[in-house]
Image 1 (cartoon, rainbow, N blue to C red):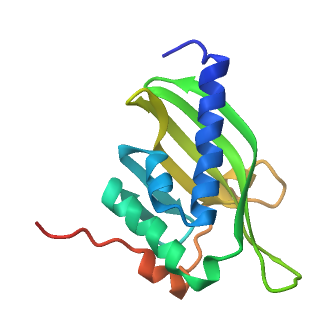
Image 2: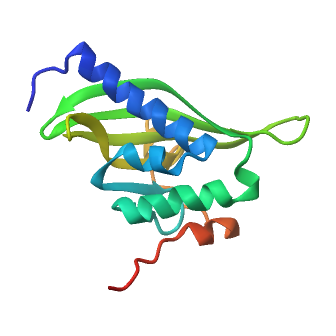
Image 3: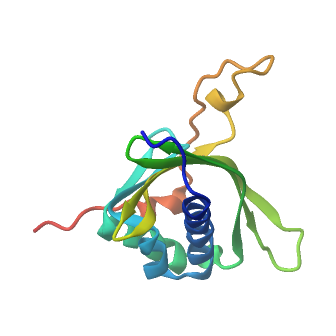
Length: 171
């Protein structure tokens, strides 16, 4: 395992985290896909069954689905408190994630309150996401607090997200 990441590596990783949000929130599908390794995976682990998009085709489906969803216009991902450290095959990070949704003249809605757990790998000379887990701010992350069990709290998947599920094309 690397002992440290250079400042340049850390900044490059933080840039990928920011680029993910900007591309998703501006409908830049190919920019979004470029944030991930060719075999990269996005796992949304907040619902009864975690949703998974793995590989370029699935990630493109994810970004295209949200770009085409009328309620996505005006969405902003806010990512803060980013911790980056080296790991066996590259780097990993965790960060807070909140998603605000603009609704007319307001008040606006905080749509998601959660966090990311990421693994990064160098591919073609660039840091890219090898794996991103999207998690709710509940369950295990709150286990140290009084009255919390630390058990994963899964919620039903909202109906509009059903179209985000990717069915690979048969060959």
